[in-house]
Length: 118
Image 1 (cartoon, rainbow, N blue to C red):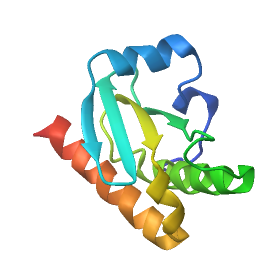
Image 2: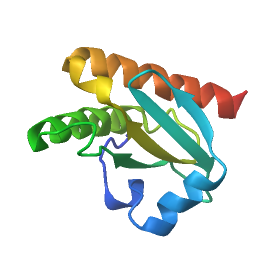
Image 3: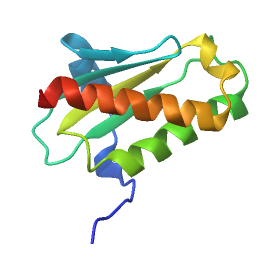
């Protein structure tokens, strides 16, 4: 049975892991969110989130955005190739309701998968 957990192994944790993605990324973006990705040596994708205070002022709003993105990743992790992915959030994300945000992130996962799978 397929596991849909979001364990520590599925996260980018250290600054070095984030920096590796920023060096030579493949991008998938919209007006509100940008995904940067590079292949990794793991058997699974990993994700790191950046939701800056400058873009999303209130903590509960930042937490909401991160929660929706994490949930979307959790459900799509088996469809993604072995990538290290950094999610960058921009100011317009606050105008999106949860279902719209979820749909947007799902679309970006698919776009990123197509770029790596051909």
